[in-house]
Length: 122
Image 1 (cartoon, rainbow, N blue to C red):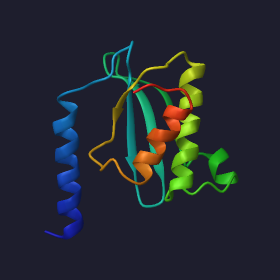
Image 2: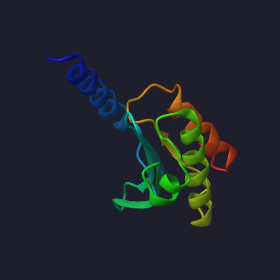
Image 3: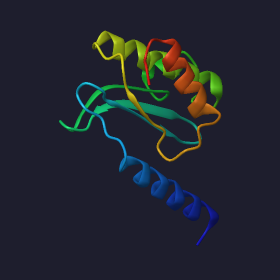
């Protein structure tokens, strides 16, 4: 087994284990984050309905035109503030943060801090 596969498998295990303890509701939806090497993605999800309420990613055309690089902290900050703005437009102010099995460090932390500064409460 290669190192990548083992790391990926362990991240999936951590994410599955953490999802046992929390899920999104209509009053307090889940802010789910996924990061790849080049991009960062986040969604606000109502798990009871199985619906995505808002989403933002560095792969969107508006972000690509603005030369946002999702592979660095500055890009993660911009995506965090964008998801906060979109959530507040839909009337969502409180969320459960799901870091997706990743460490709360680097890009994940910057996205969370920017979302908090944008008005979301975790």
